Every structure is written in C-alpha cells, then in structure tokens.
Length: 316
Image 1 (cartoon, rainbow, N blue to C red):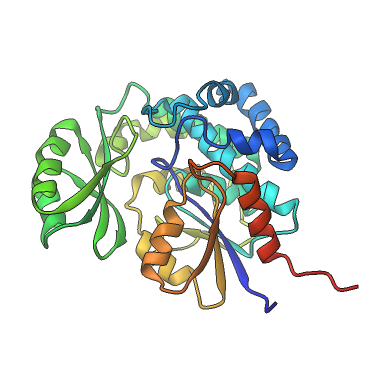
Image 2: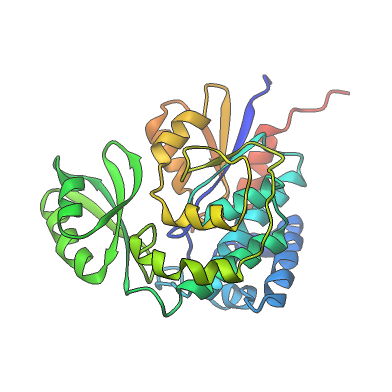
C-alpha cells in the first residue's frame, strides 16, 4: 500500500440529528470511552448532552435546534470519532474545520484541549440563545443563473460557497420566506438546515462582546496543519476570536477543499453526516474519501472498514 496523506474533516451545524452516534456508542468501546470523557467535561460546564442523545434514538426526522445541547454534542461526537480511529492506528496528517466544526478540528489538531473546546462552544451557545432573531440557513443546489444575487437582493446573506452550483444562505424568517420559494421556482433544490437563527450573518455582531467576555482566554498553536474554511488557509494561532470568526465569516468551503486536498489525499469526514465529503467528491473527481456516521445502521462496521483501508498490513 502506498502511503497517503490523511485529512480529517469536521463539519459544523446542520449535519446533526437526534440520536447521532448512539449506535456506535453502544457498539464501539473506544468511541464510547471518548464520548463519556466529553460528556463529563460538558456536564461540568453545565451543558450535558449524552442523555438527550440516548433518549432521542429513533427520532432522526424530528427537527433539533437546542444549541445548549447540539453545540457540545456535535463537537464531542466529532472529537470522539477521531479518537476511535486513533485507537485503531489511524491518525490524520492535517484537519479541516468548517464553522462550528473548527472548534473540534482545532482540538483534534492539538491546539486546545477538549475542556477549552467545549467551554468555547458553551460561550457561543449562551451568546446566541434568546439574543438572535428567528431565522436560519438553507442549502441551495442547482437552479438558474443569478440565484446568489437574488438571495442578496431580498435580504439573505451568502453564508457558504460549496461548489459552482451549491451555496448556502442565512437570513431571518422574513428574508428566507422571500428567497426560498423564488429559488424553488428557478429550479433549485432547497434543504432547510435545523438551525434556530441565522449564522454567518451580521445579526451575530451585537452579541460578540458578551461571548468574548465569557470565552476562555489564551492563544494556542495547532500541532497539525489545521485548515479553516473561514480563512481558506491554515490557522497559525487559535483563540476565542478565531472560533467566533469561524461561525461569523462566510464558509469558503470550495476554496479550502481545493487548496487542502491533493492527489495523494484520503479524506475522512468525522461529522454526524458526511456533508464535507459529499462536497469534496463533487469538486475533486477521483478523491478517495470515507465516513463513518450517517443515519443508516452499521457505523461500527464502517469504522472497522475505514481503519482497515488506512492501516498498512503488518508483515510477519
């Protein structure tokens, strides 16, 4: 087997679902131990999530946007999944984070510990809950030319550039109500994300000072190359301001994936759903990629297959 560069991807909000990871929690010891560790840290911060995940198994289609739980849950699931891969000898050479997923990516790259990551997530959630307007985000796929300009004309913000024909918008409910039916009429497919507020949006600016007052202070350097979809480049120094920037700035996913991934790269999507992998294979034909979690059964088997594919056989 020729060596390949392994890159782990950490998507953010919108990939979560009720009961995510609970089958793997039941079936895989390494994942269970890592998630128990994360739950203990989250509980100490007043943001436990595990009981909710366990109670919600089987309710995958019910919308879920309680930030006090989804934030620590997303970060912990992604961090624990990489720990489960590491227990099988799979260690990334670099990481990519998008939006909230940058917090997990930087923890996995050794910039900050899990306690700091979850404290930053808790500060984010508390800054947002009850302080941002009702609204959300939606993914837009296909459709006629001019849709991006049309979104901005009715008050939406271009929140993510995913591919030439895929982008995401953020807006309050009124702006989304103006744009989404128009986009559908212009031939686009629309996926409304399970989010209670518009993120990557100027409405966030008013609550940033409160977040910074509460968030952990310090500056940390990643030990692995950590690609940021807010920067479309590598994070040199991580701090609470960067974590905010990751959720406020537009997600430059297309630009970041094209810069970070090469011919000899294997991409592992550590998210609850393989959204970044789906985007990457759309952009880079022939890219080798893997994921473990989605809403189908068999996560433990997928984890073992990924590890087997990426771990060279030992010759005796």
